[in-house]
Structure formats: C-alpha cells, structure tokens
Length: 412
Ligand code: HAM
Image (cartoon, rainbow, N blue to C red):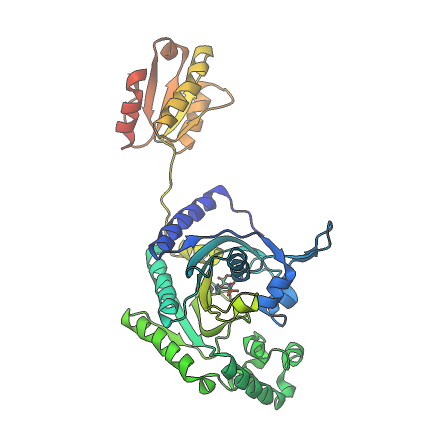
C-alpha cells in the first residue's frame, strides 16, 4: 500500500482531469460506492473458486453487529449492487464510471499492490456489440490522449452459458486425462471451476494448458455474430487486435466479449486495462436480467507507463509568494493575499517570520512566478515591491491599487 507524495500526486491530478474529460466525451456519469460491502456480494459476483475470493480478499467481521464485510477488491459488483438498490436501471440504460481504491491481498511486486486504484467503466442495459466495441475504442482514444506507446489489445469471447457448459465438460474430461500434470490447485479446481485452470501461471502447466480444448468450437450462432460485430467495428476504426483464445479473465461473471490491454514494458504485470461483457451479473445479484459490459484500468500501472514514456504533466505553479516583515507589513500581508486570491491568483503567504533574506530564499524555491514583498515602508505608503522570480526582470515598487494588474501582466 503506497503513499502518493506531492510530486507524484501532481501526475495523478493531471491524469484524473484528463480521464474525466475523456469519460464525459462518451456520456459516462460518475458514481461513488462505499469501500466496504458484504462479503457475500463479492463471493456471488466474482465466484467462490477464484484467486480473488479464495486468497485475496480483506474480509472481517464487524465487531458491533457480526456482519461479514470485505474491502472491495474490484468495483463491478459494488456498482451493480448500487444500481439495483437505487433502481437506476429500469428507466434507462446507464453509462457509469467510478474511481478509487481497491484492495487485494496479493504477493506484492512491481505493478501489483495490496491497495491500488482503478478507473472503472460500466455500461448497463446495453445488449449489442456496439457498446463492447465503443468501450474498446474509448481505451484506444485514451492511450492516444496520454501519449502511450506499445499497448496491445487482446480479445476473446467466452460465449454464453450453454456453450460454456459444453466447454466445461470437455475441459474436465481433458484435464482428467492429464491428472499427472496438474498441480494441487488445478486438481482442487478441476470439478468446481475448470476454466480457472486456464488462468494458472504455473510454468510447469503451460504445455498442458496450451493443448486444452478451446471454446470457439462450442460457440452458439448468436455469440459468434456478436463477436464478429465487435471485430467489424474495431476494423472499421483501424484498431489492431489479437484474438487470444486463452484469455479467460480471473473473475467468473464474464460471458461473450473479454479484452485486455497489455504492455511488455512493465515486466510481469503488463495488463493495464481489462474487462468485458457480463450479461448474467445483474440477475445473479438479485435484479431483473439486464445485459452489461465494462472494464477497469489500474492507475498505478498506467502512470508507470506514462512516466516511462517521459510524458510530463503540466505543473500548476504558484503565481505569487508573499514576503513580509514588520508589524504594519504583517497585518497588510494577509489582506493582500486574500485580495489576490479573490482575483483568482494562487498565492502562498510566508508564515513563520524570518529575515527578508531567508523569506526570499523560500520564495525562490517555491516555483512562484513572482514575489510580492511588503516591509513597513511599503505598508505605510500603501505599496508593495514586485519581483519577478522567473525569466529575469527588475524589482519595482508598485502602488497597491496597481498591484493586481502588474502581477497579471507579469504572469501572462
Ligand atoms: P481486473 O482485471 O481484476 O478486472 O482488474 C482491472 C485492472 O486493475 C488490471 O488490468 C490492472 O491494471 C489493475 N489491477 C488489478 N489488480 C491490481 C493490483 N494488485 N495492483 C495494481 N493494479 C491492479 C476488474 O477488476 C473488473 N472489475 C473489470 C471490469 C469492469 N470488468 C467489467 N467491468
């Protein structure tokens, strides 16, 4: 779990602003859910036999009433819960986004944290391939906007439930005939969730996984047409993609389209954004069946990539550092600072006293465009000294009534 210190936070603020504009350009509206939900919600939505639910959730009992609670490991389940609880879905489809902390007790390594941040995007009530494709196009636009290079798209389809059932039976039969190659976890999951075996990172099992029967052969016509539809729109917009039949995602709620954006430049944790369709989840959580599709991106991973690419966020520097000394001057300084802020300027007033010299050192180090200097002489004459701090220029005495205008001249 990381602290984000001010220099880095600047990058986060810039990113959050860029992302908000981008989401609004596609008609998405913000929703904010609690960090904690009943444990049962995540078990039902993500699936009992998944890494997240079996090993990674921070779950605890509420000491006051005995409720079983979990720090959210992802946002989709909470978002669907909120939409149902507040009956948002049945008047109109919803395009929603959220952003914030998620918690997974994973083995910490570069790009994988126990508290991390996601921007999550969910479109509820949309059935066609147009929205799946639009979400992928959205991502492509964001990478361009952020100046990211080397991000590749992988897509797959997981079909619908009948095809998944047929595929599941074939997978079980296949892995049963290769029991000697399965590790303990795969053996345990064989009859509960064989699809998860395909997700295994165990190097010793990769050959056996590569030979497992695929789902494509089982696809029903509707799911096939849907997948074709997504691809046609991607092709229309020149978005390159690779079909990866092994892409199954680590959460159980997906059906049909799934996708991941990956980079080779972050080591093992190269997935910066991932999602897909989850047509069964709304009903599974207790609502009337409704189709849905969404994705989430890991902000830490994205920003690591942004930094690798040398993208520099514009800094929003101070306009004025206010230096003051003397009884009269100290009193005048806070009024001057407030007056300048009324005019929309960013002002740091020196606090804590000290000589002019030491205050000017602070002013130089503050990054402000100029220093406004007030001594008792200036205060007595209702004037200030104005000193440019960047790009040279002489210090000058300025009457109080001209100060604002002169500063604006200086910083424009
Ligand atoms: P996910 O694949 O579990 O999907 O996570 C989405 C993204 O969050 C990952 O691609 C990665 O960038 C980031 N991420 C996940 N775990 C960590 C971690 N421990 N440290 C840093 N970053 C991490 C979901 O969470 C789904 N809810 C996405 C979705 C939304 N599907 C439909 N709607």
